[in-house]
Length: 435
Ligand code: UDX
Image (tube, rainbow, N blue to C red; front, side, top):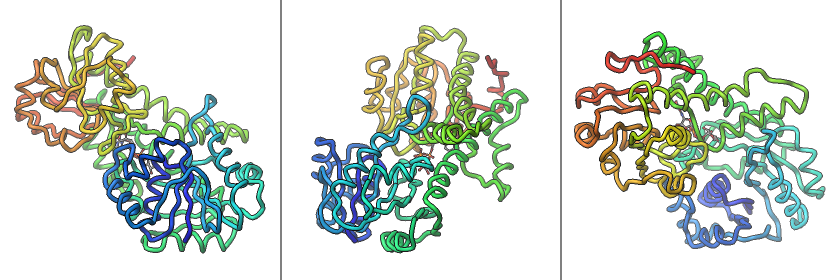
């Protein structure tokens, strides 16, 4: 099939490369010159496991090309994957979507289906048709559920594929496009597909905020949230993933999508009581974590804390909405000096934090002269750290685990104390002071 993808950001690039690897003839439209030129040379501007290799294979086989305009000729599907950032009101900013639609409507010659791949609020289909202003174009929705760090895996082995369509013909074309990907397919209206995406992200974010609040209560009563999560997650109605508490979740999607969903309700006159607090709770969690560090270390000014992890999640260099950045900013406000290490995200963190912190070239270097260690991303190399060496290097044997991922026994055996959120153990049990 002849496929066009508008936007070579995170979502668009995975879609373009994935479709090319499925055997389609793909053109990816990217208006930023530098990004487009780098991609055409096989360089991916961010870290995503496996993506660079696949991009290069697609380029070698001439299944994928990058341009700055929509190609002429017959196009089966045009995926729109431009950004929909949060506006000042919390609603999604649709200006990039509007420009993409106007370009498509103006340049596309024949019949085609415009597929919304970006997360776009339900209820704007009529506006999209107005922007397209081309009655040869149909609108469909095929929301992405890609996790950063696992995007390639999620493209080829997704948990589900969703098609929101205006016609049977659009469903057939989309099914044909995904031939070779085994997953349950859900076909529905465009609005339902869009709402399903928002509902999925909001449900995941709500689980995390709820478990984070329960972890705070675990701290109050001296319970261990890991045992509590194991019991809660063993109920098949609930399921065990996305129950790990910590200093909050991050990433570019959850906060923006949760607030956009709330805004969609509000615009239609429905005021949700449950949705907005998901984000408030999440922000507060970083403060609770920093308060815990202060409860243990006392006055923080002039202390040095080593931070392992800057990215919002393992296997990515993305620091957008990263809890690590939130925690670091709060520590800096208290006069703490920070030395940080991350296997991939140092350059992206430097763009945000500049010279406010020191950057280390290895996780052990990062510890020299530090009063304690805070682990803020769930990278495997932190989980498997040589704790004896860590103890040797630190001024005091304390590790604050903002992701609740470390093994308490291994840390205790090395003679260190493991503090987390809601991790009750004999040494670390402290009543937190919530403000
Ligand atoms: C999310 C959705 O998972 C994906 O389907 C959607 O398309 C985009 O948004 P992403 O933001 O890339 O993906 O990462 P995800 O794996 O969902 O993690 C989000 C955050 O939650 C991370 O900061 C992670 O550390 C945190 N998390 C995850 C927890 O704190 N606890 C958990 O149990 C799981």
